Amino acid sequence: MDAPDLNAPDIAAVEETPQVRRRRRLSPGKRLPASRLVGPVLVLALWAVASAAGRLDPAAVPAPWTVLETGVRLWTDGTLTTDILTSLRRAGSGFAIGLTAGVALALAAGLSRAGEALIDGTVQLNRAIPTLGLIPLFILWLGIGETFKIAIIAIVVYIPVYLNTHAALAGIDSRFVELAEVQGLSGFQFVRQIVVPGALPGFFVGLRLGVTGSWLGLVVLEQINATNGLGYLMFQAQNYGQSDVILVGLVVYGVFGLVSDSAVRLVERRVLSWRRTLSS
Image (cartoon, rainbow, N blue to C red; front, side):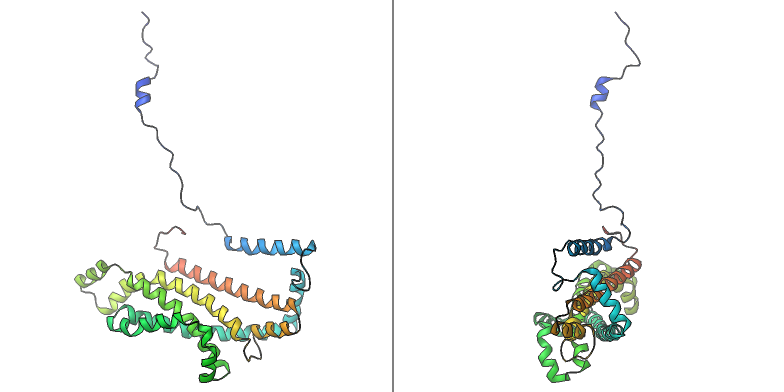
């Protein structure tokens, strides 16, 4: 009888050893640099290719290089510079007022039952009314000048800021409130250590929506009895059939929206660096 091979593996032991499953990676992976520019660059490339191939009517959709030449001309003669500064002033003023009002109302409604009873229903009613539908009424109240434009932008901004901040406040775990009471925190300490960290994620969502809303409202408002601004520039170009000028205004609006949203995202990542989320 042959002697058993001591170096041979134990087949039964190998069969009984459970196979180690390879862990499947479910996260999106590492963030790509300048990933949000991929989509706009792709759209620009398709636009350029279609224009070069003659697939687009130059009178309706001018080529990208034509729009660029028009933008440089408008910038050189000072027209575009003046309109951009005017639009930035209007959007900035309305945004600042709306942001302040939204945060203040959300804190008052989120930290007090009496404040919630007085404020939340009114804001929900305001949200149900199309904001741009308030333009005729605000013109009667505030006149046709700059005041009503800034007021409409402020309303467009404060609604998403309030809704998201208030929802974040309402979603704070009550156990944190009980812990703050047990620890004997003062009202200021409670707001700083519990309320602010709990409300910040929702606040930044509302902030991003408010920034976008300010630009959307500005497009419409600058076409109502305005003498300058990007919306006025586009409205005048429509009357003269200048599609290249209209596209210049749209590109500027798009750049402003992308840059402002990216800035808010950057601040959000820095302020909320303590969170471990899917996007981080």
